[in-house]
Image (cartoon, rainbow, N blue to C red; front, side, top):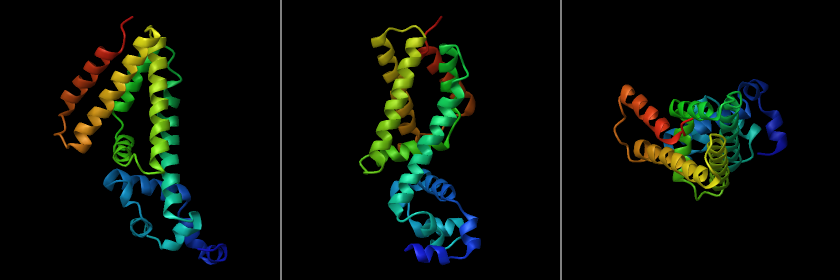
Length: 198
């Protein structure tokens, strides 16, 4: 859609949705149906607007997908790592991280869907950056908690593998969901197993 056409769209529709609204709706669709499901028409129907609203913000479906992935990555950075900066003790910070991750849902569903599409040109660099950042954060946290360099790296790999494996069991293999009490006991067991003692 050319610039002139975008400018002639009704101001009411332009003002109704932001680019972030479209990106968030795309993330919802990724969580529900995967990356391949992101398309302009179904998103417009879901949001109750015409396709013209989309083209006011994005030149293409690929541009929307990239914006959605950037939004997911940025929110994770702020919501997860940003919240933990205020926790000075490294062991308590690790406990807070594990609890935060265990009780957040949408970001994990999106991540699982992205793992299933990790060969996609737009997805692959995001998955790589996010995974590297998570591993670096875990390794640094385990170092600060008293482990040596090699042990901290191994512990970080183990923690990350447990996270990804749990997602796969629940979201890809559709394992029956644990009762809440059992899940909380599992999270406590993971923390007791992985976080070094004083």
